[in-house]
Image (tube, rainbow, N blue to C red):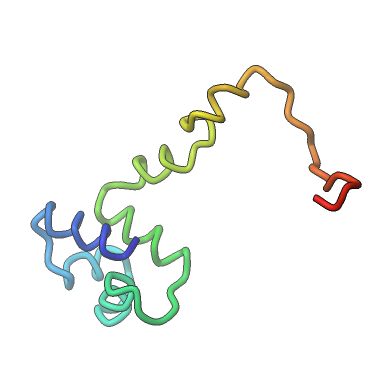
Amino acid sequence: MGSHLATWRRLRGLTAAQVADRAGISRPTLSSLEAGTGGTSLENVLRVARALGIMEELVTALDPYESDIGRLRSAERLPQRVRPNRRGG
């Protein structure tokens, strides 16, 4: 995911310092996120996505009804809770 964010940054013509500033994170944190090294929080990923102007694309990518299975099952009434079956699944 970090390399994709770095590509978005470059496509937008933004420096790492600009994105880090807009996201309210440090430059080393952004470098770590883009390189995929060290741990980073979901909050920081979302901050960077917002700073890059791609939050809506991220939300759409996570929409289960945008997937093939989601579209196939969209008319079904989904259970509130899912329990494993008794056969060990």
